[in-house]
Image 1: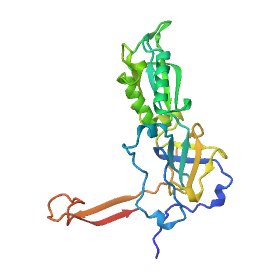
Image 2: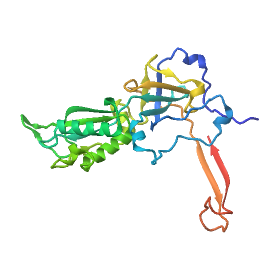
Image 3: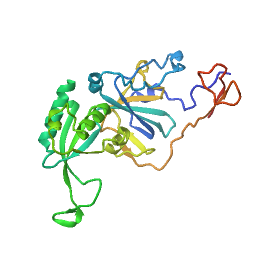
Image 4: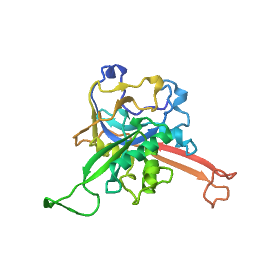
Length: 289
């Protein structure tokens, strides 16, 4: 008897042609930068290759890293038990810089302009906006009402990928000497939220909850062709930031849970097995669904 390759309910291609509203429970959120490799899901040999999402290559030239855009992969399972991945384009992670008499919005815009020119970036790669926000720490009463918390002016800097966010946050925090507008400052900019994971920023921006339910309205997405897939999910779609919405639902999707175990043997029966040591071998890999 042939082994079962898919433990989920069968999904007919016809049921997705009309691009119906998708509702699924979120299992994971992954942020990818650059071009993700694609494959033909109809190619059975491609499905058993030892392949995964590519790891970030730290040796890539900064000019190339700075120009890449990010894509957010939202993995989930529908109420019917079908696996879903929504590839969301256009999301821009951010951090904040509190304004002061020294660190003004003009100084920040000048620094951002220098960084754009340094990496050859378009205007849209880094966006700057003013926001009135409460400080994340301490308690300062509002001038007009001591029972309320005061708000302060912040510059919100948004980036088209997380590498650029981390790089620019470091330059602001350290008053980088290669950026004239920062090097001349007499105080260090107060940077916040630069260490919050991009996946968490994405969930918060869309009012989504980890393990909560997500809804994508009918016809607000494109179905990825079977010849250009990046995952083996039954449903793979592409949409834009702002489209995924929270869905209040108390039920749990029918998950497929796999328990995986691996046994290995060491040549001397005492040391921990090491793949680089002759005689150390993997003896068993098992999966139970």
